[in-house]
Length: 130
Image (cartoon, rainbow, N blue to C red; front, top):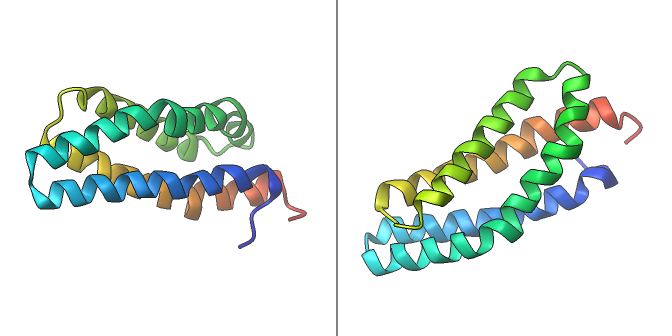
């Protein structure tokens, strides 16, 4: 489905998130401590600019509008996943395989959830003309 202009940039930002998740998954699959540390550094450096900024936009603009339309469960899930990703990012200051693996899995699943469920519902409710 074509995205409404209000959701287009958020949707585009998912490409960067998926690249980070893929790099983390590759490092985990290799099982190399140096690779895990390198992937964790990349995530920690990218998180404030790429992910946190994206989360903030959703949390300040999109999610309140969704809640106002009664989509409480979608909002709760989104906020819970944002919180877990933030926590995992903090854990990556001292990277370990389990934290990096969970980060990679959750970030990939979160992007899919937003594209397939959150944004689809938001578009239908908030921008029905699209």
